[in-house]
Length: 272
Image (cartoon, rainbow, N blue to C red):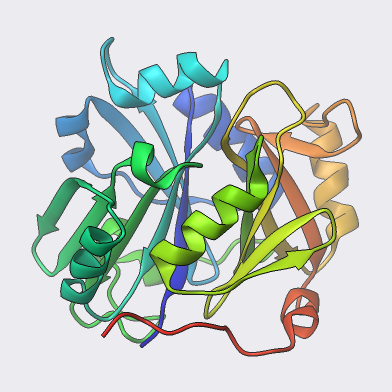
């Protein structure tokens, strides 16, 4: 059974400002705004990147979990890693065996999701969801609304190929996520990686003073130089010369290179 990276969520103080930066740098457009997130005290915007999505959320008032996350990490940044799978019952059972609490059980029409307690996972708020009819990557995906396929694909970005979480102890965090996701964590450069069916999760040491969290998003682009130039025009370049939008780094590679580099099939198995 598959386990795929479908959505990465950023939290921002100014939703529209981050959306405009993403529109300019990645060439994305908003495909859905979900009024249901107001129950969490949030507004949001989803943007399509191939068959995956970047979401930005912003608190509507004080006292939200997202607002506390902004305070804890010192500003805009990564918030959620969202995966999809064909069934949720096995993941609920497996989470219990791992000592991971369900922070929220979500259901809206054909969509249902499990959000795991971040104190139990570490790194980021982790969700696994499913949508009836969503086995095909171009099929239904509840969080993106009923008509996301009609949204034109991003002009500059083609695929989300992964995400990077940082921690003072990346080995510990990688092993924890590997246990939860029933995948293997392997040494890669100065950190660790977990291979999903369509992307890779990286785990590196936190060196920026912001602590543990979702630090970077990996995308593939037809022309990475064009993306870099667009970021320069938006003044979205960090001190190390990296693209920084929404408080996360954007690691850009040539379209298709990540798949070629991945090589081996994903390790581990889904829970029975």
